[in-house]
Image (tube, rainbow, N blue to C red; front, side, top):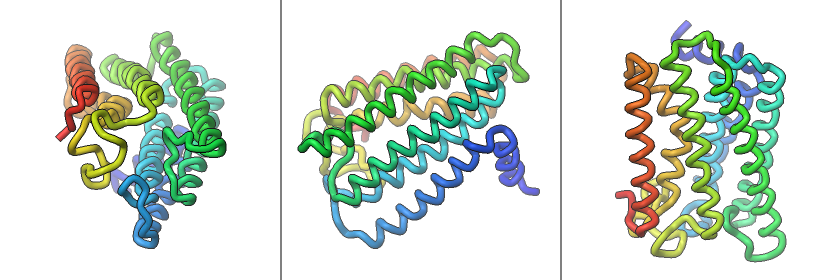
Amino acid sequence: MNKLTVLLNDLKGRNRLLFYCGIINLLLAFIMLLLIFLDDRLILGINPWIKPLKFFLSIAVLSWTMAWILWYLDARKIVRAYSWFLVITMLVEMAAICLQSFRGTTSHFNISNAFNGIVFGIMGIGILTFTIATAVICFLYFRQQKFDLSPMMVWSFRLGLLFFLIFSIEGGVMISLMRHTIGLKDGGEGLPFLNWSVHAGDLRVAHFFGMHSLQIIPLVGYYICSGKRQVFLFSGLYFLWVCVLIIQALNGKPFL
């Protein structure tokens, strides 16, 4: 068997539910990719199916990351409950995003009428409760003392979870502002696929790198670092860099 097959089998053995959640989201991402070529409409200047595509890919990565991380926790009942909660909340989130894309309107920050406001409100409640649930997982990782892992990887997972939660707060900042672009209206020219603004500040940049610390810190810990000290050093620098990205966006400066 090749390395990818071994990895997938390992993921399946660790958490079957989240393994299949990742598979399904990858398949749905592929469907979104096909729809991009079949639908020539635009929402804020981009194809309506690009956003669902990005979210399906992100949820696939999240599902498989959590399948790996949760394996090392002793609180198996909480792990099972959290796994189902992840699947259900992400299902609701993606149903709302796909519905609004199908309707030809935005999903986030859309309170243009009662229905759109309800959809956005449901999405917000879902993400808030999921963040609280993830905070419980983070707490368990810090409380548990014995792991079948090296201390370096334990701290990689702990800091990845912690930063994931800290930078998820930026989502609340965007909600309070009801936009992600600073200096111009949402929409307009952006980077290919990512669509981050090239003319103004964009809070999605820091949100992306902050949330994906959940993957980046453990990967750097595993492949590059040789001990806890290096994990702490990299994590500290990474934290400061994402904070700089937030300040840059709030000052209306584009990422590139």
